[in-house]
Image 1 (cartoon, rainbow, N blue to C red):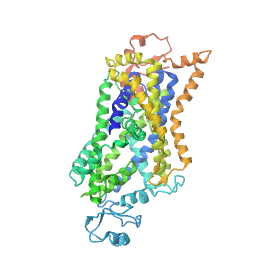
Image 2 (image 1 turned 180 degrees about the horizontal axis):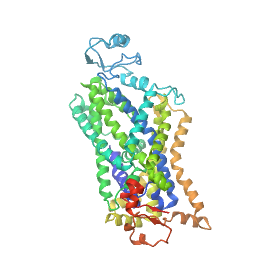
Image 3 (image 1 turned 90 degrees about the horizontal axis):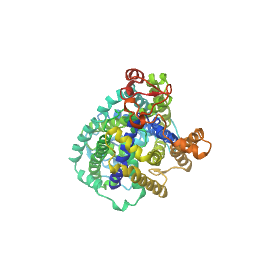
Image 4 (image 1 turned 135 degrees about the horizontal axis):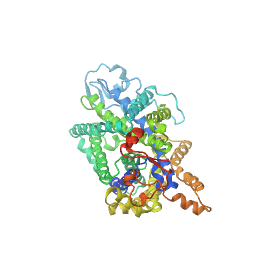
Amino acid sequence: MFPYFIMLVFCGIPLFFLELSFGQFASQGCLGVWRISPMFKGVGYGMMVVSTYIGIYYNVVICIAFYYFFSSMTNLLPWTYCNNPWNTPTCNGVVTPTGINNTLANVTRSLVTGAAEVAVEVVNKTKRTSPSEEYWKHYVLKISDDIGNFGEVRLPILGCLAVSWVVVFLCLIRGVKSSGKVVYFTATFPYVVLTILFIRGITLEGAVTGIKYYLTPQWHKILDAKVWGDAASQIFYSLGCAWGGLITMASYNKFHNNCYRDSIIISITNCATSVYAGFVIFSILGFMAHHLNVDVSEVADHGPGLAFVAYPEALTLLPISPLWSLLFFFMLILLGLGTQFCLLETLVTAIVDEIGTDWIIRNKTVVTGGVAIVGFLLGVPLTTQAGIYWLLLMDNYAASFSLVIISCIMCICIMYVYGHKKYFKDVEMMLGFPPPIFFRVCWRFVSPIIISFILIFTVIQYKPITYNDYVYPGWSLAIGFLMAMSSVTCIPIYALYKISKSEGTTFLERLKNSCKADIKWGPALSEHRIGHYAAPVSEGEVEVRPLKEEERLIDDRSSYRCRILI
C-alpha cells in the first residue's frame, strides 16, 4: 500500500492530468494529438497497440464473469461440494454434507448428494484442493497441461464472449452519446454492491483478522523492485494512463472544462475505491481463513485465482450464497464493461480521426462493429483449454513495462521537445490558470525519473511468470516479450519514417523539422485559437465547417469541437 500511494501521488495523478489536458486542448484522439511533435506519433500507435491487446484479453475476463454470473442462478452454487463428476479425490471443501466424515466423503462423494443440511468442516491437509478451484480448472476451463496444447474451444465461454462483445457494441453504437449514459449505471451501481458486500463481510467471524492482514505492512518487501513495479502497473491500470483512453475521452470535453479539478477528483476517488474494495475482499477472506483454521495468506490469491477461486469459495459459506455470488459477479461485469467501453472507443476514435473521410465519419457505427468483430475473433484462442495461459501471458507482458515506457516518452516529448514553457501557456490558455508548481515539477523531473528507476530495477529483478506450479516454456516467454516490444517499437519505427519524409538536406535538419509542431496543432475551434494560434492560414489550406454542419457530420464529437479538414 505504501508504494501504491507513492506511485499515485508522484506518477498517477500528474500523468492523469497531463493526458487529460493534452487531449482536451487539441480535441483529438491518441493519434491526432501528436501534431504537437509529429515525430512522436509512434507513441500514439503504441497506445493503440496496448489498447488492442488489453481489449482482447480483458473481454475474455468479462465473459468468464458472465459465465459465473449465469452459473450462480441456482439454488446451490456448483462449486460448493466435492461430489461432482469433475472433482478429484484430493478435493476438500469447506462445506460438506452433515453427518459424514470428511475422509469418508472424499471416497464416497457420489453417495452424499441427498444430504439436506450443510456444516463447516475444518480441513487440515498439507495440500488442499478446493471445490471452487476444481470447478475453475476442470469444469470451466478444462485446462490443458501446456500453453501449446490448445485442445478444444470451450463453447460456453465462447458464447459468453460473444455476449460480452455484443453488449459492448450496443453500448457504444452511438459513440460517447450512448456510452456516456450507460456509465452512469456501470460506474455507480458497483458502489452499491461493494457496500452491501462490505456490510455483510465485516459482520462475519474472522473478518477483523483478514482486514488486519490487509492493512499490516510487510516492510521487508519494501526494497523489492517487483512490489514497486506492481504498484506502478496497478496505478497505470487503475487510472488508464498510457492506454490512449484518457486522451480520447478528454478530447470530447469542452475546451475550457476544468480538467485539473477532474483529474484530482477522479484519481483520488478511483484509488479510494480500490482501497475500499480491499476491505470487502479481505473481510470475506478472513472469515474463510477462520473456518479453515489457517493463515489469511493461505487463502488469499491474486489475479484470476482471487476473482474465480478464493472469493467464490468464501461465498459458499454465506447464507443464501447464490445471491451474494450474483451480486459479486454482476459487479465484476459492470466494472469490466466500463473499462472495455473506453478501450474500444479509443481504437474507434483513433481510426476515424486518422482516416478522416466523410464516409467513415458518418459511418462510425460500422467502424465500431468492425473493431468489435475483430476483437471477438482474436479472443477465440483465449477460450480454448490453453486460454488461461495465454491470457496471463498477455496480462504480464503485453501491457506491463510498455505502459511506463510510453508514459515516460510522452513526458519527455511534451516537456522537452515541444517545450514545457509553451505547454504551460497552452494549459493556462485553456483553464485560465497555469498548472500548479507540483505538477510542473512532476511532469519535468519526478515522474520520468521514478518511472525510469522502476523500469530499470524491474528488468534487473525480472523473474519469468508462472501459473500455480506451471512454468512457462522459453518460446512462450519470447512471444510475451515480442508482444511487449511491439507497442514500444512503434515509437522509433515511426520516428525514422517521419524523419525520412521531412524536409531538409541533412539528417539534423530533417530531425529538427520532424520535431516541430504541426501548423494545425492547437485548439480545434477557431474561436479558441488565440495568441500565436491565431496566425492566418493561406486560403484553401483548411476548411472550417460551421458547428451546425459539424453536428450533423461528426455526430457526438462535434458538439464540443469543429474538425479542421485538409
